[in-house]
Image (tube, rainbow, N blue to C red):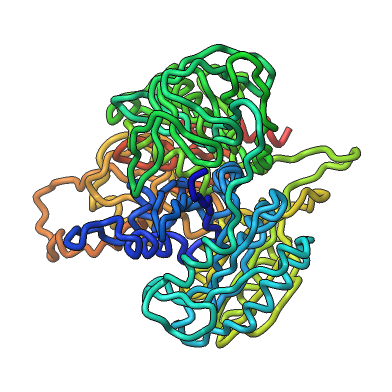
Length: 601
């Protein structure tokens, strides 16, 4: 049996998981001394680097003192909980990373709960002890309390604690700086158990997928029992019990940041299998003669849905490569294979599908990925999923945590209570106030931008799904109306300048617009149709002033997530590779009036 440890790193978003993985890679000499490696090595996806968060879990393998350590880096954002839930199946222990100032946050609780349920051995790392105002001892007590509240076993409660700073590159068993992170690596070898191996024939659950343009689809998972060899015939067992015979063409194990080809993988190690087809996450690769399936991977239900449809605006097909409903449904089906927390359902309209996800961030990453791949689509307003529980209409509630400077605490509380949130905890934390609320998921839509405006960008928000509870009343949506384009054409500086007192614009002069497109926010609460394509009439009267002296306010630029939070039920977003436009679902004014009468009737 080879010396082996499988460990997952779990934490709330921004507590330093990926930086810790960087340090583990550097201190185990994965790179040559003169090799440029950069920072946040594991965040290799374009969107992960732009957003500064981890979205997809990844594996690396390092060798330390003759022991192979498989390290799994997991996302910390609540919307990607589906990624965390399935990869924890590959681990035998977890490093729970906690910020020495912030302490346990909503997502810390969520990922720790999953790890304790699976019976994994925890190591607690209190990171960022070099921060001003940090309180490592208080945080250690808070972590112990969290373990206790989550019904940890006696053995799990005796967790070892390490203190240190990923950024400065040291960890120690007490809060005293050392040279490097070897005390933590020694701790992994000492406290994390070797993989439990039961006797019997081959069993391996597919927990994630990889893709190579050269090898095709690759199944990744941990061999739970037996061994798998190159060229071996195996059974692929689906969760519904259907079995197909397949052959393993090639086998790879993880080494450093890459993979190494091998002939045989023994129980306990994580490997990649090439050459099989029609497999999904959750399937079991089992013995060819007497196949036995492993228990299915349970994933929490989605809490939000959005309609995805083809782009049917007048600018359809100008920008993207994939514009038909066939392209759209094929792409969504491909996403379902690897994105376990996602669901897709057809609607009465053959060109539109309902896509269910964990939250706005989860869905926006999918839309952004599709946009970059060349898809054009129209997406509707995010809606929370209402369920009927014991005859009572219920909606999802979330635990919302806000850390905000004391001067802005009252504004933050006011904003959340307007959206039907109840304040549970309020306590001072350093120079800021720590607020915890229970709020319907509906109330979170559009809250972030309002909160940042009200607190001068100082608020730090985090939320996590808690449970379904009876439906609360109406939650106020956007207060202002919108400016809608009357005609199709190119917007002119002359028209926009004349209309500046009517509101703020989302477009600049010279941009193409069409009838029914939302081009700005009205200064009042009703929608207003305006003409922004009118050119200045030329006559032989001399103007006393110059035309170019018109001062047009810069346009408001909104990200995809801000657009998703901004729109109302009668509006949608047109997403193409180079443009994100807001528009009314019914482009013509008479159609909108007719629809309004139907709704009122």
